[in-house]
Amino acid sequence: MIDKQQAQPLTAGLTPNRGVQQISPYVQGQSSISGVAEPIKLSSNESSFGPSPEALRAYETAGTEMHRYADGRQTALRQAIGEVHGLDPDRILCGNGSDELIQMVVRAFVSAGDEALLSENGFVMANIHCLSQGAELVLAPETNHRVDVSNLLSRVTDKTRFCTIANPNNPTGTYLNGSEMRRLRDGLPESCVLLIDNAYAEYVLAEDYEDGIAMVDEYPNVVMTRTFSKIYGLPALRIGWAYAPPDIVDYVNRIRTPFNTNGPALAAAAAAIRDQAFAEKLRNHNHQALKTITAALSAIGIEVIPSVANFYLMRFDPASGRSGTEADQFLQSRGIIPRPAGGSDQYLRITVGTDDENAAVIEALTDYMAS
Image (cartoon, rainbow, N blue to C red; front, side):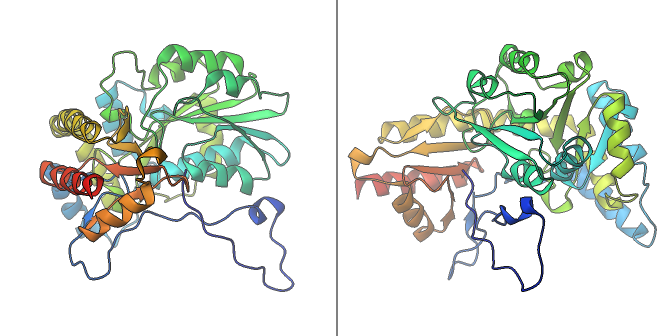
């Protein structure tokens, strides 16, 4: 459910690989409104609170060393992640966002002609990486805005070599519990890598949710990726991490470029993950804000898909005469930038913001529904 633009015509004489020819470039969330100096940007699931003060200080200090290469082994950040989560730093990989880590796992374990199994929604860059590697995409439909494990497993073949699930999923905000994730893993071939994209894991408070770490420890073919772009508020620095079995770490490191992460990003991320009090504050705010938003929008006739992430997907009933497209336009007229979802006129996705930003959204949508 991510908007894509049409690929440009090929330059005469050049022939890209077959997979790349099937790809349309990723289009990021809108960030500006013509004539509005400071819009409320709620289109990209960023943290409206910014990073931890500790991360800002670490970034500023690291900036004095920009004339030096960063530590290519990313030792300090891997150690910080290991300390916070109780993990072996040697099984941690860091990348230029979790996006690059997904790409490297695909490059290491997917070959032309293999099948990549994905749910119909999820991080569209995973689809792009698989296609560019020459894989055949196999997409399983979702049920009631949730990843459907039975639908995924019914599409497994002897060519299935890669499967990735965003958990929580985007743009729905829904999740699979630990039991369902294990059912998925057990139904895949042992030769298939299961990558759990946990970009929004830090926001989840549901008791039956598992963050993927235990599954990596239990199974030799499971990888978990995380990002510092969401709750830690560092999207501009492009920094993420993965936890994986030793063999997978080995093969990914063989193709990882020597300095794929920059020094200030490594320093800021290490400070950010150690400031768990700051992350806890944001997690609790997000949890309470979702309750307030859901109640307010439900009261005015907008369906809100239950979310455990830092965004929510709204569905407008066609019988109401209201639509996601019109709501998008109305919100932008009030200086608020949401995110269209999946090209469907029924849906619109909005990031959870500050209390003032959320109140502005509720007020605008209330006026729209009453107009």
